Amino acid sequence: MVTLYQLEGCPYCELVADRLDELDIDYDSVWVEGLHSKRDEVKRISGQRQVPVIVDDEYGVTMAESERIVDYLEQTYA
Image 1 (tube, helix red, strand yellow):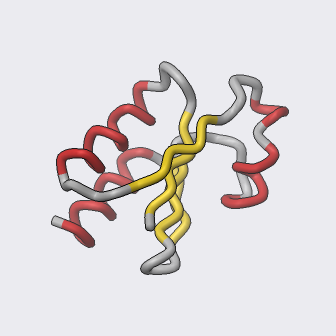
Image 2 (cartoon, one colour):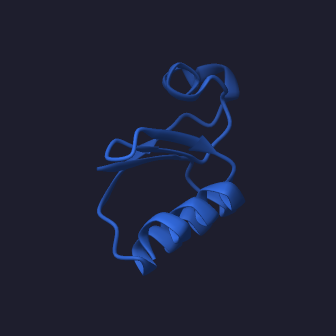
């Protein structure tokens, strides 16, 4: 199962969500707070407060930065 931590209106998050949809990958969305200081769950998961972040339980991967995430998805699921 893949979990995507994202922020409403974030173009980088939308890029990752679109690629997940294109690759037909089932995923859960976790919508995070707009304020960086309120993103404790993201910090606990990834060590930082930026989004997007994905957690891929099947492969034991936690990753941030949209370009890296898209590359990972394409290499792993395409």
